[in-house]
Length: 294
Image (cartoon, rainbow, N blue to C red; front, side):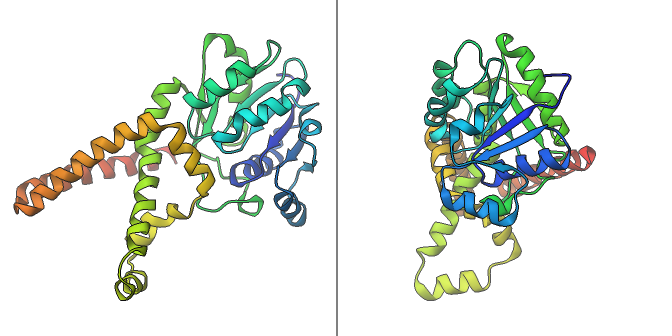
């Protein structure tokens, strides 16, 4: 498979799945691309917009000739999908996923994987607040990290997936599943949880106040809460499947909020200034790293 372009199947044609399809065709990374989604409405939308993929309405038919199978479905649905397709995968096929949590996905899928199949857990750190086939575009993964979870048993399969993701423009890193879940809990999951909460708080305000919050919302509020429009099914599954790491980071965040509340209440300006100064420097260093990548 290293010497020729693989046949690729994409299960789930939301933002990530449709972007994998678009990127694969755009960069010429596969010999064929077949797509399936459990939703007839999604399949109709994909057909209507001319998504560059061979669409099928039978999940088993979608994977039977595939060398690489991308599971681009909510993490809570992964095991159910694998149960449907595992007996139809050809020897040597590689399963990989795009879920935002890794330990729960591994625990769900590894017991289902047959000896002649490899499973390489993955997570592209790319996305928007939009969903569905129309949201996908070919450069979504360009210059973004794509994390893979590896062990000694899957070294050769990891190499195949790594090369494929790099063809889509991604920067690939291999790491441990538990470490991944902790890192993503603070960098992705907690910010989404906060955004959902802030929007919920705003919506529960008195009618006139709520209207003016919406009316006078500054760009900072709009930018930060943009992610609250993300797919609710996906994020429900993320929080339920990475609960331990999310709750640990949420506890730390709550303690930091309590510190801020006490400093404001006791008018301790130096504490506020020092915190804001330190976090501002950290934020600027993050931006510098981003520019360095470009």
